[in-house]
Length: 434
Image 1 (cartoon, rainbow, N blue to C red):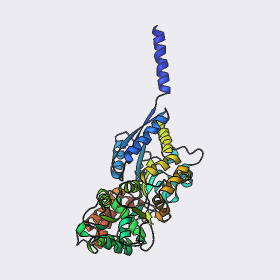
Image 2: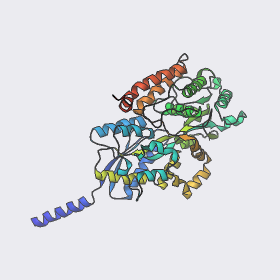
Image 3: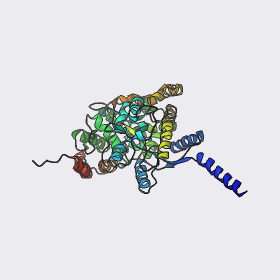
Image 4: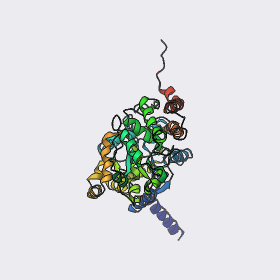
């Protein structure tokens, strides 16, 4: 009897071992407004119920910056997350710190390399933020560019056309501003959680400049003439033309004013497209390309999937399966329709349901069409703190009438140079002794 009991126990243990699931943690942020957290939990639940080998625990981690901090803290504590949705411009910094695996160790691309998978399946504008020195370290998940959102009803009533350049933005904003009604012509987000620098990068590109060196992680161009011109345009909207309120504006304040019909135009992410459309109930909303100045140009935004070092081989395999699930054409299309982000995987747009969606929602095509002008997202050593060096100065610009764009650019550049110094010192060529 005892032998039978021992045998049965061993058999049950063996069966249990065979069917034991691999547990992985999945950290994800919600950087824009809407019901993204709810949708992500549903997507994860669908994956867990679709198979018996992997159990994914979704962990909502706030915005992009807090997600990066929480993932690093978990890794330091010995609990590395297997999959993280991280801001796409964090990839270079994570590679420099040796925090993440190259994708060749994670995903199964059925015979091709991770680099071929990325190059062949995803929009070209996304490659620079997912690859470092020709090696893929991330797979794009949801992506965006800034868009011009506008109250089409207000513009039509005033007999105005959608502005195509900065001068026209100013002209339209002047007509739409009515301080007695607390109505403003335009608003730009000035929060220092990536939105402000992202919009400034877009303005800098439109002004014919570069915001950073895409080939070297130790250079930013905050004090370049093109950036100073972009800062001047921003400040002048507040203090010269008085078409935007002073003070720090977050995306909640901007969208609230827009929904109430008190805002003519806004520069916001494509990722908020569904949220903005669903809540613009008392008027017709329009979207358009970001206005040009010297040229057209916008930065890529959004997030990519990475795997942090320190997980087991089984977890690496499970992470690869889950990543492939998330970026499948079907789920890329589903996520795009639920959020407003454009689908990073090109084949998503070949699906019948996605073709119908694009036909029924022409505003979604604007974001896709704008990709022809897209550049990489500023990405450098210590990205978050270097980024905040300029964002904090943007906040001063819209709060202090006597603070000049030239001084803001100078102050930001000096701080950024100090923050970049460890990387520059490590990588700069040293004079060789004869």
